[in-house]
Length: 413
Ligand SMILES: Nc1nc2c(ncn2[C@@H]2O[C@H](COP(=O)(O)OP(=O)(O)OP(=O)(O)O)[C@@H](O)[C@H]2O)c(=O)[nH]1
Ligand SMILES: [Mg+2]
Image 1 (cartoon, helix red, strand yellow):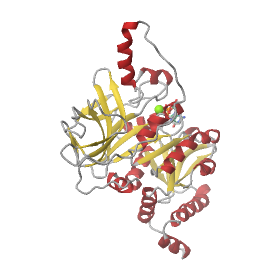
Image 2 (tube, helix red, strand yellow; image 1 turned 90 degrees about the vertical axis):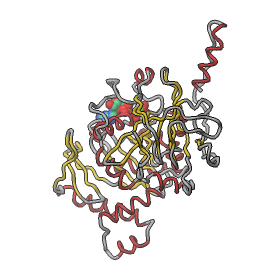
Image 3 (tube, helix red, strand yellow; image 1 turned 60 degrees about the vertical axis):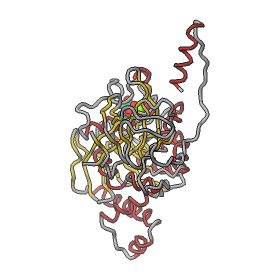
Image 4 (cartoon, protein in one colour; image 1 turned 135 degrees about the vertical axis):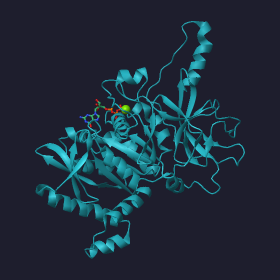
C-alpha cells in the first residue's frame, strides 16, 4: 500500500467533553465510508477504538484512537481523543499535528463550561476547528441556545451552518444554510432532499443572512455585495467558509447524530470542501515546504504487547518510507496505516498522513523527525506539558521485581 500521493489528505482530531460521542462518531465515519462493514457501539464494547481493557470497562476513551480511511478519493486520518480531563495531555499532544479539530459536543448547556480549556487551547494555538452538535436525536436544547452558551468560550465567532427541522420536539432533518436546501434524515442512508418546510422558511432565511454577515466580516467584497443585496453563489459561500476556517477566524457549527449516522456523510463532504488540507495547514503553521524534505512529528506513542513500540506521527512534508534512517540514529522499522489496533503495512507515507512508525526506541511523543540524509529540521512546537490531575506511587511487592517495574514504568511514560 502506498499513501504518498495524497494531495488533499485531511487529518482531523475529534475532541470535546467525555461522553459527547467522539468514539461513536469515529465508528460512524468508518461505517458510512465502508472502512468497516459493521458499526460498533461503545456500550456493547465492540468499537474500533477503545480496545484497551480499561477503556472497555470505563466505556470511555483512555487514549487517542487512530484510524485512516479514504472517502470520495480523499484520505482521512482521524484521531479520536479522550474527553476526560485526566487525559488532556493526550488530546493536546494530538491537536498540535492535525489540520482540523472537530469539537464534538452534546446540546447540553450545563456542560458547556467543561470545554473552556479546550477552546482556549484551540484559540491560542490557532488550530482551525468546527463544532459538531451531536445527539441531535435526543436534544431538547436548540442549537442556537448551545451556540449562545459557547460564544464566551472563544475569541472567534461561532457560525451555525445548519438549522434543525423539527416535528414537534423531534429533529427530523436540517436546512443546509450554504446551499439553502432542506434535508430529511434517513435511517441507514444519506439524508433525502425535501421541499423547504413552510414552518422554517423565514427562520432559515434569517439564519443564512447571519452566516453571510459573519463571513463578510472578513471579506470586503462580500460585505459590499451584501449591502447591495447581491447574494453570493453556493460555490462562493463554500470558498468564503474555506478561507475563514483555514485562517482559523470563525468556528462553523454543524449538527447530527453519530449514534444514528445522521449528518455524518454531510460532515465528511463538508470537510472535503472547507477543511484545510495538508499543504495549506503546513503553510498556516509556517512550515517551509520548499525542497519537500521529510518532516514529521510524533503525536502519540503506543506500546503493544505483541507489536512493540509504535510512534504515531503526522507527516508534514516529504515522504517517509519503511527503513528510512532518521536524524538521531533511529531507523523506521515498519510503517503502518492504523485502524484502531489493526495495522496495514505501508511502503511510503506523504504529507497529511498520520501513520504508525515502528521501533523508534529513542523517540518520544512530541519529537520532530527528519531524514538523516537531509538537513536536520528545527523542532516543531510541542503541546505544553500540563500538570497531572492525579498521582500515586507504586512499589514492587518483591525486591527482585524492581528492575521489571522500572522497565514497565519507562514504557508507560
Ligand atoms: N442518543 C445518542 N447517543 C449517542 C450518540 N452518540 C453517542 N451516543 C452515546 O453516548 C455515549 C458516549 O459515547 P462515546 O462515543 O463513548 O463518547 P466519547 O465522546 O468518545 O467519550 P470519551 O471517550 O469518554 O471522551 C455512548 O453511550 C453512546 O452510545 C447520538 O448521536 N445519540
Ligand atoms: Mg471516546
